Image (cartoon, rainbow, N blue to C red; front, side):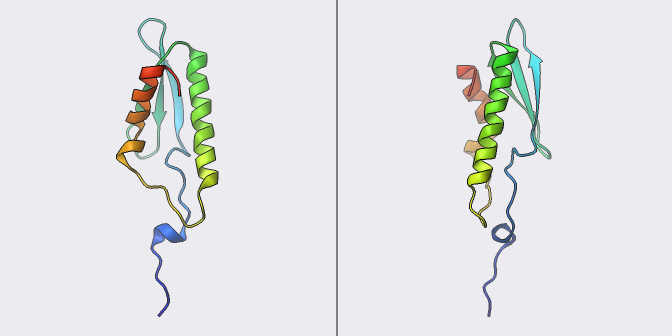
Length: 100
């Protein structure tokens, strides 16, 4: 009998953030935040950036990371959700440092 493969090993899945949309919004005072919208999930907010350009740099860096991770995935492997890779975790990191 032939080897049976699950769907996740036969088809390459897209990175969870590959289709993310980013919206910059103003916080109280001079700070800015980024709303990360991923299809089929709740939006998350990444805060606090000192300027709109800092928020734009974070978005560009996040997109580059997603592209790099997508390109480095070996055929047959799939992305898996884990509690450590949630958007909320990204937000806490940005809140602490204001950028990636």
